[in-house]
Length: 295
Image 1 (cartoon, rainbow, N blue to C red):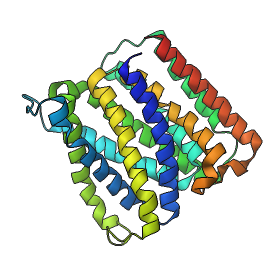
Image 2: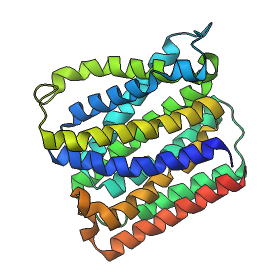
Image 3: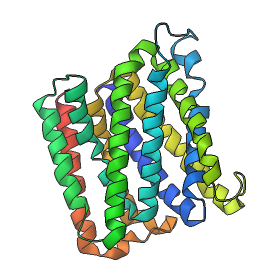
C-alpha cells in the first residue's frame, strides 16, 4: 500500500476528532477568527523544521514566491469558510459536504493539469457525491442554517481544491521540505489581517477554552501535515482527496457514539437521520476501496 494512502486515511481520522474539539471550543466561546488564527499558527510552527528533515536545508532555485502566496491565500479562505460551516450547522453535515472537494479536485485536475484520471477515480468521485446526498440525512438544522452550511462548506471545499491543485503543480520545484512550511508562513502572515476581527484580545482565553482549543489546533495541524506531505511528495490530488473523504465517515460514527462527550447532540435528530448518514458513509467507503484497488 502506498504511503499516501495511509497518510490520507489517517488524516481523515484525525480530522474527525479535531472537528469535534473545534465545535466544542467554539461552544465554549472561542470565536471563529481567534480559532482560525491559532489553527494557522499551530500548523506553521509544526512545519518549520521540515526543511532540515526533508531537504537538508537547501534553498530551492528558480521558484517564484507567488507559488507560496497563492495556495496560502486559497488555504486561508478555505479554512475560514470551513470554520463558519462548523459554527452554523451540524458538523456531521458540514464535514461530509467538505468531502465534495474531491469532485472539485477531479475537475480542476482534468482542466488545469490535463491529468488523465482512471475510471476507478471517477467512479470513486461519483460514489462520494452520492454519499454526500445521503449524509444530508433529511435532518439537522433547517432553513437558513442548513443552506448557509451548504454554501460555506462548498465554498471551503472549492478553495481547498484550488490549493491542492497548486500544491501538486508547484511543490516539486521547491521540494516538500520548503514548500509546505513556506506556504504556511504565508498563511500565518495573512492571518494577521484577522486581528481587527478578533473577539477581544488575542490571549483573552480562560482555562476551559484553552483546554479544548489546544488539542483542537494540534490535531488539526497534524492531519493537515499528513495531507500536505501526501500531495507534495506523491501528488495524486484526486486519489488523496477521495481517501481523505473518510473524514465524513469518521465524523458520523463519532457524533453517534461519542458526540455527547464533546457536547455535540446531533444524535438527537433521530435514528432515521443517523442511518441515512451512515448509508452515505458506506458509499464513501466504497469510493475508498475503488481508489485503493486501482493502485
